[in-house]
Image (cartoon, rainbow, N blue to C red):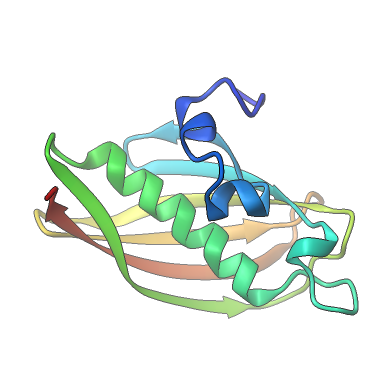
Length: 137
C-alpha cells in the first residue's frame, strides 16, 4: 500500500491540503493509521526545517482519517482540538512518518495520539488530536 494511488484515501483527497502537502496514507486500520510526508521546501521554514504547522496538519489528517474508519454510516469526524510538542527537527530532503493510535473511542468523541518520526526513526513531534463525531448533513 505504499503507492499513492493504491489506497482510495490517497486518490479521494486530490486537490485538498493532504494532496498539497504530499501526505500519503500507508496504513489504515481500526485504531491505527499511518502516513508519510516528504519534507520538501513547500512544508519547510525558510531555513530548511519542517514547519510545525505542516507537522500538525499531518497529525490532524492521520487522526481524522483514522476516525472516519471508525465512524458509523452517516457520520463524519471533525477535528476540534490539536496540541503538539515538537521535540526535534526534520530537514528538507527527509521524509517523516506519522503513526496515529486511538486512545479514546467514545460515541461522540475520539482522541488520538500521533507520533511523527524522521526516516532515521527520531521522534520529531508528538501530537494529541480530538475529533468530534457528527451526523452527516
